[in-house]
Length: 120
Image (cartoon, rainbow, N blue to C red; front, side, top):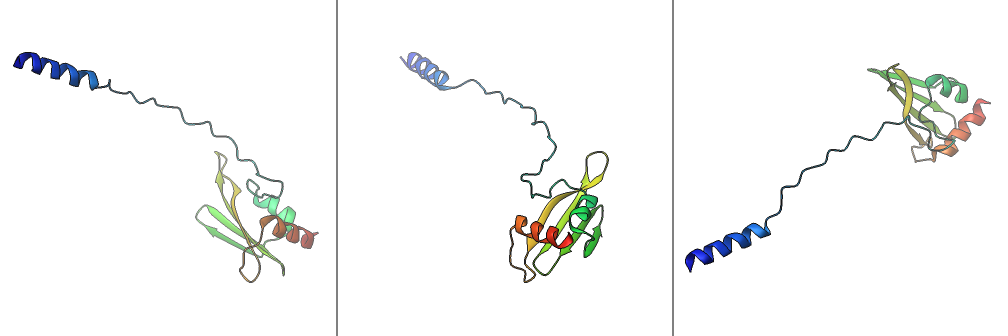
C-alpha cells in the first residue's frame, strides 16, 4: 500500500508540474527618424535652422560634443539643446525649454511665435 501511495503521490506532483517556458526573444523595433511632433516643435532642427527662424542666439554654450543655444526677447527665453545625430554627427535639437523672463514656464508654441515675430 505504501508503494501505491508513493507512486500515486509522485504522479500527482508530476502532473502539476508545467513544462519549462522558453523566453521568446523579440527583435528591437526599428529606429525611425525623429519627426517634429507638431509644426511648432523644434526637435530635429539644426543650429542653422534655429538661426534662420530666430536670428543670432543670445547665448551659446558648448559642452563636450553638445551645444546649448539660447534665444530671448522681453517676452520669453528659449533654450535649445543640440546633440550629434546619426553617423554624420550633425548637431540637431533634442530638447527645448521655454520660459518667461521671470523663470515661470511658458508654452513652447507661444515662445517660438514671440521669438519668430521679433526676428522678422
